[in-house]
Image 1 (tube, rainbow over the protein chains, first blue to last red):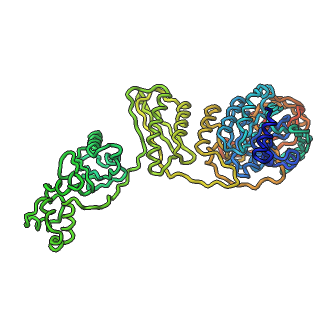
Image 2: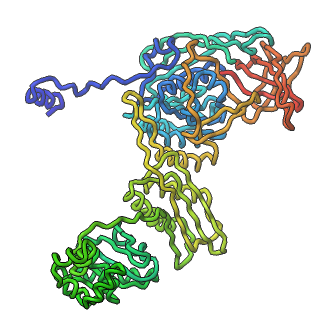
Length: 226
Length: 414
C-alpha cells in the first residue's frame, strides 16, 4: 500500500486534509542592514548562514552589525574567532553590547574553533553563534570536512540560535540555508589627517544572495570607523 | 517523642545529626524532637542505642533519655545514668524515685517542701492540685506537673551552625582523577543536600587537597550565579583538576562551599532566554580546556586611547551599558592582527608605496595619512605612532603604522 493511499485513508478517517508535508515558516531576525534584509528576508533562526568574500569585502562589518542587532534585542551572543582578529573597539562603536558577547579566541586554530562552536551550540541559549574564519587561509578552511559542517547544522536545528559562518569562500555548501557573497565595490577615503573620521571613510559593498533560490543582489554603504 | 542528652561534649552536634529541631536546655543538657525516627531506627531502644553510639563516636559522655514530652526526658536524663526510656503514660511511676531538687525549685519553695517532708517526685505528684495551688501558687503547680511527667511545651529551637564543609581522610593516597571524582561526588552530594534542606545555594566551591608530600593543592571555583546543581559542580571540578592537576597523590580531601541565597530571575516574555549560568560556566570551562585559560570571556574596553586595549571578563561580571542601535547602517569594522605583523615599507615622497609583510605583499594603490597618535607619555610605557590606511594591490584595505621599532601592519578593514 503506497504512502499516498495511506495518507488518504487517514485524512478520510480524521475528516480533513493533513498538512504532513507543510513545514512551519522559519523565524528570521534582521541583519541590521536593510538592503540585505530586503533580498534575504532576514537571517533564519535554527539554520546556518554563510557569509563569504575576499578580504576587505565587508564581511566583518556585516557580522558586527548582526551582533549589534542581536545584543540590542538583549540576546546573548557568541563569537568564535579562529584567527583572534576581533576588534572590540570597532564592535563597540558599531553598537555591540560587549557584556552580552562571549568571545572565544582560538589562536589561529580552525579545529579548536569548530569544537568551541559545537560546544556552544550544544550548551544552547545563544541568540547568535558566529564562527569567524575570515582570516583563516583558504586551504585550511577548505580542509574542514563537510561532516563537521553537517554536525554544526544538526546542532543548531530546532533551536532559536542563528549560526553564522564567515570565510573567504563558501565551505559549508549544502549545509548552509542562506549564503551571502560580499564584494567591495569601492572605498571612500576621507582625504586627509584633518578629517574627523580618521582616514578610510567607509566602503560600498555589494552582496549577492547565492542560496536559496535565484541569485539576488543588493549594495550598501558602510559608515566610517571613528 | 523527645530525646534528651545530659553530660559533657558537643551534644548539640550529636542531636543535629538526628533532628533539625534541637533545644539547648542548659549548658550541659540538649533536648531534641525525634518524632518519626521510629521509621528509620525501629523501636525506641534502637534509637537510644544509635544516639549513644553517635555520642561515643564524637567523644561526648552523656546520659540519654527518651520520653513522650521534653521535660520528662530532661528529668530522666538528669536523674538516671546511661540510657533511659520513659514509658508513655507511666512517666509519674518511672520518675517517682527522683529527688525534688532535680526540678530546680526556688530556695523558698525547696525549704517549704523540705518542711513538709516532700523529697521525691512521687511525694509531690501525690499532692492534690487545689491544695498546692492554694499554698504554693503557680510555681508549685508547675513542679507537680513536672514531677508527674505531664508537662507539655514546645522546644525552643537552636539554630544549627552554618558550616558547609566536608572532609575525607583517605586510607590510601589517590593518584588518578577518576577515583578522586567518585570521592568528590560523595562530598558534593552531602553538601548540596545540606544546602537544599536550608533553602540555600552556593556560588563558590573551595577544594583543599593535602598531598602525600605534605604540600597542599587548593582550587577555588566561583560561579556566576548561585546554584545547587551537584552534577555541574562535579564536572567543573573535574575540568579544573584536569587543567591544574595536583603534583602528588592525594591523602586528604576537604571541600567547602559558600552558602548564599538562591537567585530567582524573571525572564522577559519576548526575550530569548540567556544561557543558564552554571551551564554556561561549564561550557566555558570545556572551551577553555581547548583554547586555553583566559581566552574565552566577554571583552571589556579599557579607559585608555592605547590601541587594542581590552580585558577579558567572565560573563555576567561586566557592566551592561545599553546602547542605542547605530542607525547609519553597518559601520566599518576592523580585523586585528595579533601580534601586529612587522612590515617592510618602501616610501616615495615620504609616503608608503610598497608593502611586504607576512602573507601580505603589494603596491600601495591608495593611501591616507599619517594619523598621528600618542599617549601615556607620563608613564614608563609611552606610545607614539603614525597611522596610514592603504589600499593594496592585493585588493585589501590595511591599517599600517610606523613607530620607533619600525613599520607594522595592525590589521585590515573588512
